[in-house]
Image (tube, rainbow over all chains, first blue to last red; front, side):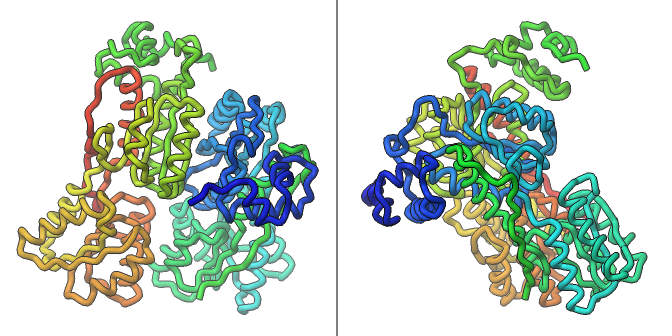
Length: 317
Length: 317
């Protein structure tokens, strides 16, 4: 196969070589529409820019640093894949690290990134970090999953996701709806998602039946017993992972008439359970957005402070 | 808290400061036993060597590169965590990449690593790579999961794991044993694990009832139907992941008298299924071994060509 050149990309995109070159060098004098079109073609053709096409400046490392909270988190892995698509297509490399929710570790990773002279950092916010420390960092930073004042953030539709589920349950005629949540000290998956539930039951004069654990299915399993002390015909879980615990409890007790929903569209859950109801939070898309955003920031284009990803109700057959 | 120094580590280890320093600089004039003891103390105290304690040489990047096949693989994530424990405790950083089983991508990652002047590379062998290319690499390389001639390899007890399960089934009085495998073109999870089954049924004059798919639970679900055309009282699965598909099929068909086993000790499976039988392949330990090994190699100590990790039968209550 003949090696693809910048001319092939230009031809396919219907623009000139110099425009492709400007996109690759994240020059801000490119219309947003054109930039998107060229990036799409680059992805589709799997074009790898040569060093000359990238106009490599020797003082640039052409590396982006990414810090996940857990490597084997299915949601973060989906987002990271989206990021990699964009970052690699720009001829950049990635340094990836795992914080395991440890602030100190996150800080060490950032220090390592700065030693390696990364040009930008994308951080899953649950990793935890002192924001004052982060503000001193001299390269663009994007926060994933939580809005942080003073930073560009890409967040999920935590509130809307729970709302969508509750409206669906209402349409199904379900009225006694319990909530399996995550500790409220977690600002998004914990607090924001519960807020939507709380508002909904208040507005509809429904009983508030809720329990709060951590992110594990084991804790959710234990807490299902607490919810079941009440009369209930549905349980809204703050994440798909919690559904595993709830479903196990119900299965063991031979309870079949309770509808259970999750959030996150974990592939395994849709496989294991017929009629699994969940919400797609656009994890992969959020990674693609983050990838595009970091290059905009590098080219000095001003970006929105906050992007909220769209969410979609997903009902299994 | 007072910052820990090299003296604290020396005191706790019962050795002199210069010995600790030699361990940190992977000098080969340290007894293996002493090295292990000092590394253990470093880990326990969470000691981070300062630059002077590490005797930083300016031409060393103090970075190790790791290539996984999938970020969200539970087995690889466990191994990577083991590696990080050792590598960070030596004051080194890690660059992590994902190949998605793509040879070209693996090669690109290695090129990126060499540009970043990594001092060593640990590669999950299922990533796929041309070994002739890899042989030209001038830094120590460790292959995880597959034995590759000419490279230091850390492999799992693929053969012994299946043997342990089959002996357990024999003790339980099970005689009609089916096998849910992975395509034989995969040398370890596919071929080696099946070899153990094939030999066992031949030696015991049992019927060979086997089916081969890929690594997904979806394919395992489809193939269970094929196995069930035979009279069967147990199914040995090549991985825990495949168990998810087999169990779903049996549950849907209300088949309750078949014993199912996996391999890999996936936490979720032990949670979901009572009496889950599996084999612990020592993933995390394999990562710790790999971490120690790469520093031995860096210090010029000759290492074994191949380490086989131990395996243990795990029976759920």
